[in-house]
Image (cartoon, rainbow over all chains, first blue to last red; front, side, top):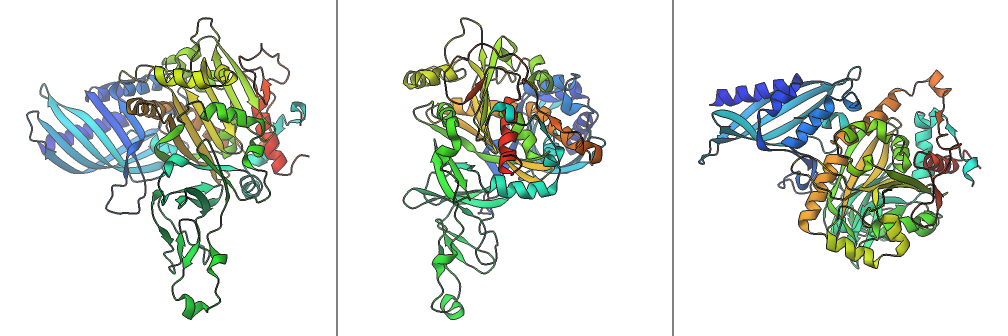
Length: 162
Length: 427
């Protein structure tokens, strides 16, 4: 099971890195939600630094479809030239939910390098909290919460799907 | 100051020269009223947020007696920041270097070893945190370091009417949803400011994909736009649905809420707000505002809901600036509507949204195109609309210089005109 989930997430990252967005969307559950809560420094170190309300991104599957439809347009200025993107996914922590539906809470660390030539590449790192479910025999990504390691990221870092 | 006297060409050195940045921190950010926070961010005594006023870090705090203080976040001893986090609640700010302790009003409460080390005559009252002048308008907290600046309303000039219309429409007032967050972007801050001040010209090109995707909804139809500006540098652009039969309302709000608000509103304010597809603008020098009601953002966001976003631009260096984002909602809207409004603002105008990506891409490309020698000989051009005809009258009669053109750089000329005036470059 561990190998299957690792393979799934490595494949998923490969699809993003190689711009095969339609294939990537096929890995998403219909109710998929992608959230990037805003990190905020707090006085109390025992409190979560990720805000409950503020978010950099909140994207459903249908919204992501729009995002990729846009990329196909000649007028998607921020995507021309396209960025080089490379995901490095590691530190897999897999916990079966143990309910009636076969589902897993999967935590990973991710480093993403994004380069829009000729600019200098930028690096962004984050922790990911995924929910992966099996539906009709295949694994699907049901949700992803991205915990960025920067309180004030650059717009280049935010241009990444983690 | 007449429009004709305003600049139609600005040298690129104002966007590139590090000495210009140093001067503008003093002459522009040091002398203007700057928006720092909304009252709803610090509702309880002891609540605070940390912000920037140009190059100066500040604490905005709610003190005993319901006062709001804006003070330099820097110890009066050796200058250490006395508060390191974005927000919280406290009774004191304690410096982590030598332990000087300040109250939430900025008064110096004590220093370790006071009598033994500083002597009996050491006067704590001289050494409170440096205080900025503070004024509040519709819950918006403004501050300035300039003791000689005219008061806020005088500085706003005729633009005050538009801020009333923008922020005062709902009898229950508006509040910040969630809080504020920040992003660092490439490009001189003034490019971003000019864009928000009234650039209707870029929409169909820079944001063409948004029309292609159907997000812009009614804005793709028959619209009429107008810009308004004030010699103090404040600017605004509003766009109206021109078709007959468009309902006389402000789109995207819950029926009961907006009907109550419009019934209580001044008739000219109603005419200014109704039938608009978007209103955006700039409170000089660095507060940006926008309200609109996008149509479609996916099957889970399919409808029309309004949002109101504020931004503050803070220069990092001449080539980068920090953008702070706030979402404002009517205090009396339902929790469900507020959450939906925040979803829409995140998807359209959030830092990671693709509408935003188009603008930020242009700001990057402007920075990348600045050049050096030949660039310095090629000033930016601000002639749009100068020789063009004006349209019919706008639906409202309000103060300020109303320009009956949608595609015009009248507002950009106003912004850079006021900027150059503050910088001592014009009479």
